[in-house]
Length: 323
Image (tube, rainbow, N blue to C red):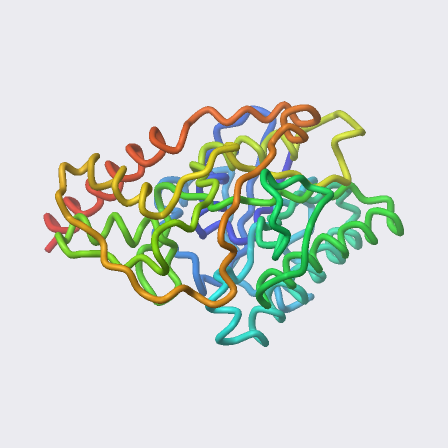
């Protein structure tokens, strides 16, 4: 199979590329990325691989999407402009990238006769629905522009599957974390921010009282879900949306203390105001992905945090040696 991965220089995308290049079912991987949030450094481990190609371009340009889809058999659509706060600050760009860009990819795949697209959905789609655990068919009202864009992606997927006989699989990610997640910038995710603070021996800021909880999910589990979705032969498994998580809650306060314990640090966090648009608690029911895809998360939150902390620690050591 020849596979296009949009956003393949980003956090999730680059980890997926690395695994697919080891898969005997895969003969070629092309990445399309505009490097706005991704980085060429994320491709260092495979940039010279004979079966890999990098194409710099923007999913907001339809001609670029058509060219990227040319000669491909499957599409993994990971490109997006993430972050709830970013979407609140700049809803127009989030809409343009996440809705127009996704529609471009879906349409380009259709035009190039690519039958299956696996796309990154989001747990933000559950919005204000209070029920736990989150079940795919029960959602509330979106709480941010970002959440709206990811829900619209799912609506387009349903329509394209119906109208054009395509196979679309949406993966609702629940707070994916791990190596290569960017700790820099105003919209960095919480785990790399915590790790960087610990490594620099400074107190991190927790938004709210620390009781906000998430179903934190290590990157290897998300990669597993993507590969299962790309290659499933079960017709019941396609044209579905799945929760991709571990099925457990961890509060932000607990999360920080797990990382501090791993580092042997006595740091304590400071608490700031809650962020607008944030969901208070989140935890997934992953039984649907288990039943239809065979999804089975291999690494727990604690195991993933250990792997993640050690990776950032090694990267920090390399940086110090270079300087």
